Length: 136
Image (cartoon, rainbow, N blue to C red; front, top):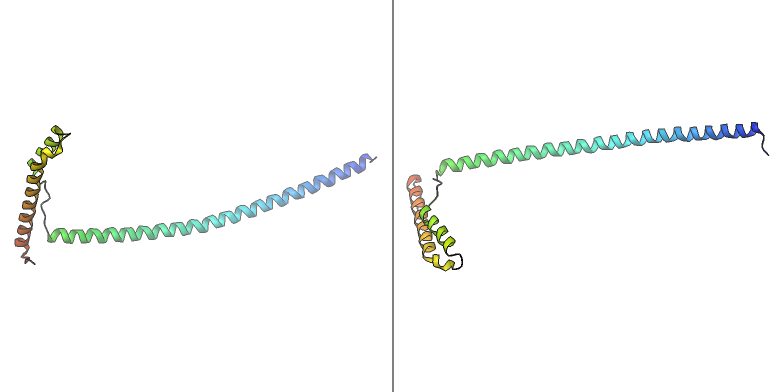
């Protein structure tokens, strides 16, 4: 049987060993944490740079689009308005009242289509006259 002194000595050795293991674990944890933080910072910087590049490209594209749009809009002043509104309303009403027989509205649709085509032709002619564009 072991003496109390040897048992105490063994316990002290075990406590010392456990303490060393804990210290090594703490050091290892610190090292891992530091490595993780470094990797995180590297990837965060890469991410931030990509976001900045994307923002620059987006801004350049937006500016370019806006500039081009303004150039075209200034060259071709087009009056954006609803055309053939009465025809539109009549067709909608016709479809509402003839839900089960939409072919009843066929003539109104033809009239609307004719109105749109005529308005389109007139608009093109007016723009050609304003800009002095020759017919191709």
